Length: 284
Ligand code: SAM
Image (cartoon, rainbow, N blue to C red; front, side):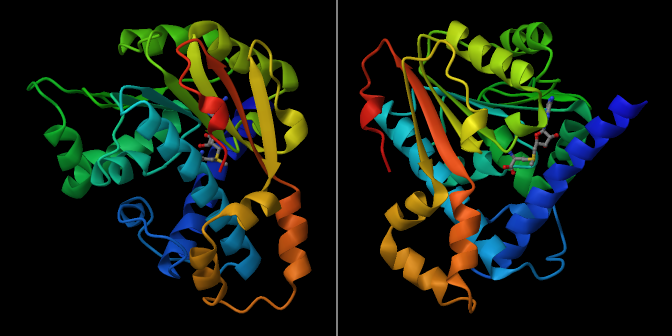
């Protein structure tokens, strides 16, 4: 049907994101020691402004993410909505920043591909097994559940089934929770993304929601505090020594192009802070 074809087109956006990250990391924009297990080939060259855009997004989101984890001393959960082939689990493990549990949700077809790679590549599976205390680790085509890492195949537009699946895998509504959606809500109708954001506000009393997208898509239903920074501002707030390093990697003759691109996007975050973690101070 038309809607199946539309969903398939949305699923392929995950491959676009991964190939762009694969290329940018191959050029040295940032390090990702696991992405090549998901996309073997470096692929076609991408324009320098695209690489810098991904650099700003990855670094900006990681700064907020890492600060939340440090502030909660890893006694928290992360839920990555529409995670695609994100390699966050392995980075956080390597950097000793693994939360109590990381949940990732994506369409079952995308999850199946991710799980297949994990199953067949020991550098991906070993860290998961190492962090797991018992012999029984749930691993089927569309779900992975271990002590610290859970991948769930679900449609984010179907809230009741999403809620049910996450609870089945021991989501803990009492833990400080960071929700992340990077380029995901834009593929839903405003009422669908609003339902998702509202579900998050209802489910957790202490939480932060990070969303990378166009500003007007972010809905603050039920959240105490919300803020946004456009990506040009984020770029100017990143550690400038590293920015200077990546600006030497490739020649960009039209800086205006980069500015235009970055100004179109933003990182938004919303928070609820019953436990008074002071996440309002979480500014880059
Ligand atoms: N967040 C990842 C990143 O930044 O690399 C992937 C971004 S990709 C542009 C969008 C992802 O959202 C895809 O993996 C897609 O399958 C997922 N997605 C979009 N709509 C979804 C839905 N209704 N249910 C589950 N996943 C969805």
